[in-house]
Length: 165
Image (cartoon, rainbow, N blue to C red; front, side):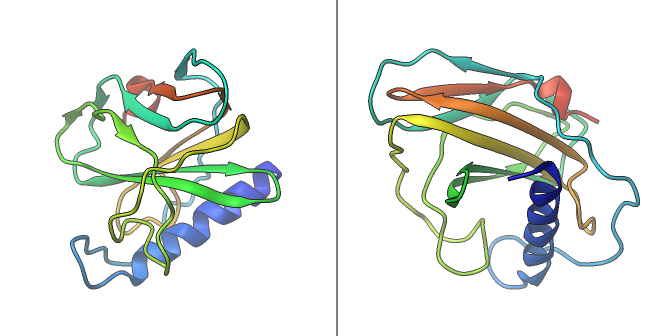
């Protein structure tokens, strides 16, 4: 999947978030930012794992200035679409993502909806896409893209500085 395909996918996801009017998260829609976020390969650390299938758990160092925003994280593999997700409400201006296991993508159009099982992925290489959304923006304010190698359970530590305002 090309960088443009990922940007289009993120825009579509943001549009889906605007449709959510029921449930725990309410987001109003409107005009978005005119600037395109630039994906970055820097700013994340992967803790070495063993071998075989495994889970991906994310956490972060301190993220500054993003209170009231939503962090969406998706795991994908070329040709297979989104395989796992995490939806995290950033509820303070100095926020650290606690250990959060990536879980199955829920049915329907709400990526933050419902409780789903932790996803176990076959050994292989995956793409981790992280975006921070601030309503009413249609595109993420901050975005990171990183390749993750699953060989057993993997812990990825996101660089909060790269995700801060």
